[in-house]
Structures are given as C-alpha cells and as structure tokens.
Amino acid sequence: MTSNHSRLEKVAKKVLSEIIHNVMQEQESDFGLITVTDCRVSPDKSYLDVFVSSFKNNEILPKTLAKHGFDIQRQANRIIDVRRVPKIRFRYDESGQESSNLTSIINEVTKGL
Image (tube, rainbow, N blue to C red; front, side, top):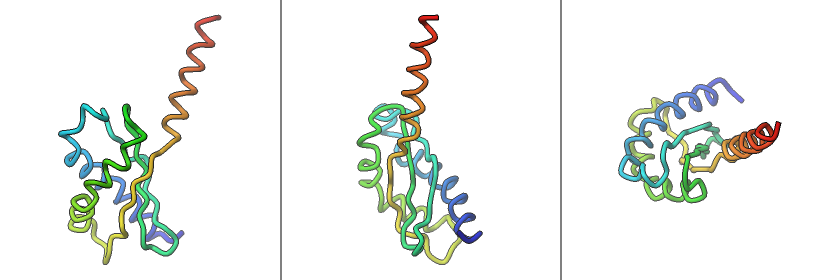
C-alpha cells in the first residue's frame, strides 16, 4: 500500500466520522453511538470501504448509511483534498460485536468464581 492510500484512509476516517455523526443525528436513538472503525481503499482505488459499528441495530447500519450515501459522498468530496475520493461503501465491522460477545462471556465466567 502506498503512503497516499494510508494518508487517504486516515483522513477519510476522521472526516467521515464527523460527517456521519452530523447526517445521522436524527437517527441516534435507532443506533446509539456510530463509530467509523476503519477505512480501506480498494487496490484499484475506485472504492473506499468504510467499516462502521454501533451500539444498536448493527445489521441495518450499513444499509441505512447507504441511503444517505449521496450526501455523505458529496460532503466528503468537498472536504477531502484528493483529486477524486473513491466511491464510498459502508461495511459492518464485526470485530466490535465479537469483542462485545467475548466480554459478555468473560463476565459470565468470572461471576461464577
């Protein structure tokens, strides 16, 4: 991966976190806190996969964000200083759910000790 990829991913994560927070404020009760956990540019530079998680309704979060995709993409294009921001795709970050499940299991086990 080039340093340009890395720089774009870091900037995109910060910028998209702010944009998503603003766009999704009205739906905060549906999802709770929405977190952009990672951004990855595809090898051909045509897509920017944005990994997201939330406290509630994780399964529908990417589809809900995709409904706002045009507005999110437009705002990102204005803010991120690159020739062309790749097309944004939203992905559910399963690592957050796995971490939560593991914490629950650990808590159950330690209760019995």
